[in-house]
Image 1 (tube, rainbow, N blue to C red):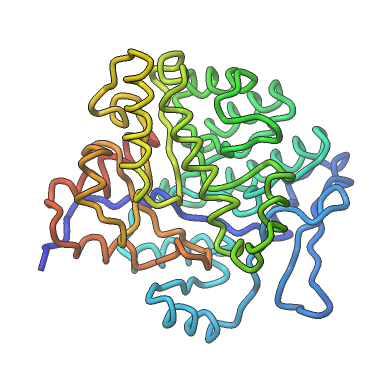
Image 2 (image 1 turned 90 degrees about the horizontal axis):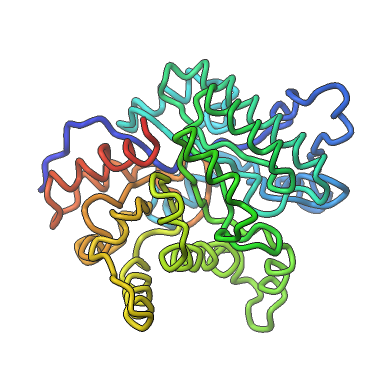
Length: 368
């Protein structure tokens, strides 16, 4: 059996689950934008955020502890987290649970922004601002162990840059971007001011699985034959994330912003060889030189999962590009609070490589 590594452990994909307290940081003049939390009368366990008069984003159901234990048993993955810890009402409890899990630092990503959260620029700006202020307070209480990826109003780029600067001063290490933002791809030049400012602030771009195009989400949800399958999030969220990485590899972005770091979060890493070959083929067809270590050279990082064929993935991702996370606080196919321990016990991977994935690579991605 492999011996567990002794380096610090950085959980590159952990979450905070928004609550009504998240929006207490709205200005008095912004109270009209406050997200409202509703429960279905037919299913009071399920709750929904309503913003601009529409159901938005994601709110995980408040399940009983026994129900979560049963889910963990069926899936073979640990998903239990204390409610006060995952919602960060009790930061000390979160840190205590991290100690139990063998985690030194968590990088927190949002839950709500998995889809478009607002129809109007003013609403988006206010909701983002409140969320970022909330995480700034969490960071202050977190003893340096809770860092975060800020959310920005992409419909108002000047405001986005102001919020990025505030977030950087208050513990943020990345900027959350979705693979699709409205009708624009991640590589659209419209977003270049965000990438330029992120480079200046030394913030990473964190492309967490998501889809900010409502029409595309609805297409998959209503596709004949797809009923019931979308709950895995594969078609709606993971697919666009993988394609966004391919588009990034063949775009001008790595050359225009050579110091910018890109993290593709929660899509596993099993797809890396496929994207590698697809990009290489297009480079060759265009007569361009293809970097053998293209992920490392272009500063692209990918979160792996313990069930990935990591020796195979590493042949294409290289030693500098994989990180790992627990998806702490969520209840989906990526969630495993025991992922770090399981990874440390994997065979077929050197201890030096494990150290890179657990510490050196996420440290570089998030500039910790």
